[in-house]
Image 1 (cartoon, rainbow, N blue to C red):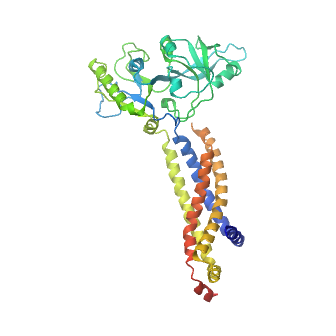
Image 2: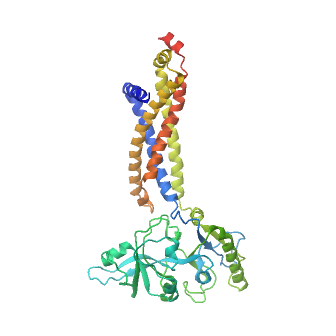
Image 3: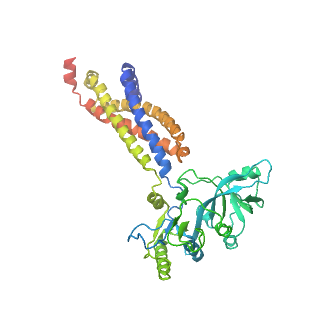
Length: 433
C-alpha cells in the first residue's frame, strides 16, 4: 500500500511542480538554518569529559580584602599561591591539581629550527589521571617530581613531531627560556572542548604544547597567562610570590560526588582558620562546582549562539507554517479526486495516510537539501574569526538528529492538511462534478 501511495505522490508532484518546489525549498531552508545553529550549540554545550564530569570539582575561596565586601557575593574565581599550595599539600581529595597557564620560548638544538613561542601549562602530577590525558610515549611525572621541583616536562604530539620528528623522545632534553628540561612523556592528540579546566585563557581553541611541574615554575619564577586579581598590599612586590595577595591559580579536586559536601565543609573550615590567623578578612565564602556546573556558571556557550539557536528554530516554525498552507491548498484543490476515491471505497484513514505519505516525501527531499545547506552553513561558520569556529562539524549524532527533525517537520506540516483532506464529503464532490 505504501508503494501505491508513493506512486500517487510522484504523480501529484509532476502535476504541481512549482508548488512542490516551494514546499521543498521552505523545508530545506528551515532545516538548514536550524541544523547549522543546533550543531554549533551541540558542540559548544557538550560535556568535555563525560565519564568523570560529576567527579571533578572546581574550588573557590574568598581571600579578598574587606573593602567592597558584599555578604553572599561570588568569591574569587581563582586561588592565591599560598592557598593553592596549602590545599595541595593537605590533599583532602582523592586527587587534586593546582595549575595556571603560561608560555615559553623553545630553543631548538637543531640548526634548521629557529626559536619559537608555545603555550604551556604549569600544573601538578594528578592533572594527568584526573583529566584522562592520553600518553603516546612515556608517562607523566610523579608527585615525588613535584616535591623535588624536578626539571621534567610532558610535551604534546605536535611539539614532539616538530622537535624530534615524531620519534620516542622520552629521556631527550628540551630547552626553554634558558633552562633544560628532560622529557618524561609525550601526549597523544588531546584537546578537550570547552577548555573547562582553565577558562581564563579562553573556552575554545587553546593548544598547550608543554606541561611542567608547577613547583618548578614557582622555583624558576616563570610567568603566567590568564587573569590575575590582586588585592591589599604586596610585601614581596612580586605578584607570583607565596604571600602575594593575588588570585591567579586554578584548583581542581577529584572525589566521589557523595563526598562533595564533606569537602565543602573542609574548605569552610580552612577559610575560618585563615580568617582567625588574620589572612582572610572576610567570613568563609566557598564554592564547589562540578564540570558542567562550572561551565554553566561561566557561560561557556556564547549568548549570541543561544540567540541564533532560538531565531533559527523560530525560522523553522515559520517555514513549517508556510508548508502547511501550501499543502492545505494543494490537497483541497484535489477535493474532487479525493471524493471519487472515497466513493470508490477508500476510507478516511486511507486518504489520511495517502496525504501524509505525500507530505513525508516532500519533507524527505527538503530535508536532504536542508542537510546540504547545513553543511554550507557550517563551512561559513568555520570561516568566522571566533575561537570555536573549527569545531563546527556535523557529526553522526547530529546527522541522525537532522534526519529525525526532517521527518518530524514534514509529518507535522502534513498532519493538518491530511486531516482536512480526509473530511471531504464524497457526495458533495460527486454532485459538483
